[in-house]
Length: 131
Image (cartoon, rainbow, N blue to C red; front, top):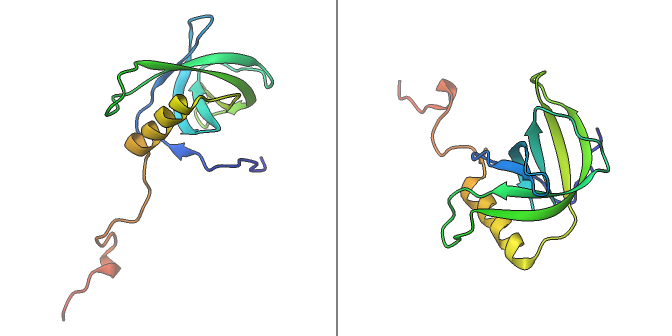
């Protein structure tokens, strides 16, 4: 699939629950996130083009007392996960308020899975051993 994102998504260490705000049922778990959309890991398929309001259960965030945020979204795509029992659902946010944007940014800042190279040797060839 060709990458068309305007912002890179950030993989998260906290898999927050994502619900259909109107139906109240669990859609799945937040896999990645940016201020334009999210990827949800689900055990059910969703049709591209479906419009819904999602409710994301918020992890603990400094200075934010909300327990959830509701965001209007559209299913951009749905594809099988590497695990055959699950699907990955790409959601495009239709509109974020400034407050919601700050909350999403706080989630990313606090729970982004960082893949930066550590400041220590990770392979024996990188060790400076005097002979």
